[in-house]
Image (tube, rainbow, N blue to C red; front, side):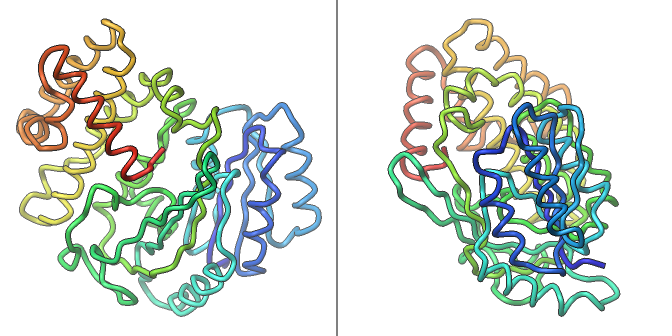
Length: 340
């Protein structure tokens, strides 16, 4: 068995995927790299096949009709043989020295009856537009270099949510929780780091800058103008997250996980609401109200809890001036935390 499966969804990635793959290959024979060619129209498939021919014991290629990023992740989960599973986008890369340290840790867990459920490392925003970088770490959230549970988790700041970039899941846990991301939908990475959490009992945090997240391309899904155009997909993902887990059942059994998942949902509701406002279209302002009505119909208690949280309140300020202030506060947070 491999220690770690890297799934790399690739769509028209010919210009940059080699850098990503080369950093993953430094893991050697203990890693598995699954390159999912998602119906690309450029040389992505040929490049993937060439790498597989050169490294047949490490790299496998799956060619599929275009299904979107989520279906690339799904294919990785279905075909992974690694003990742990991590998604790396084809325009990102990993720190090679940090990868060796991660593999040393995973090797020590490989013989255990039930290895740790989730490993967390830092990730680094690499901003192409101003050639700066920003590291997201969890120093104040998690104890370091020890296995811990939800009761040991500290306080989360707005910049410290778990993202796809920061987590390694035990592969069997992803299959156990029935994770299946929707096809042809952007922003499904939020589902990936949310739905499995009730199944996670044990965690481990390494203070390593492992994942390098390239940000700043104009066509990138997190670019603000792109997010406005795709706001319906953001809303779709938010609705899936609202119904994929019974968050309220965790109120007494796992209080800290319950609080975190509520805060994550609050963030998703806020982001969806803000981009519906930014679009400036009357139809989207109506969709914003419909989204909150959807939550109310799904879970009235959760609706009351989220709508009047400080984060969600920002996106629910009344009237034109309230909406203007909401957008201004969002842009202020964007400058402080540089998240897109």
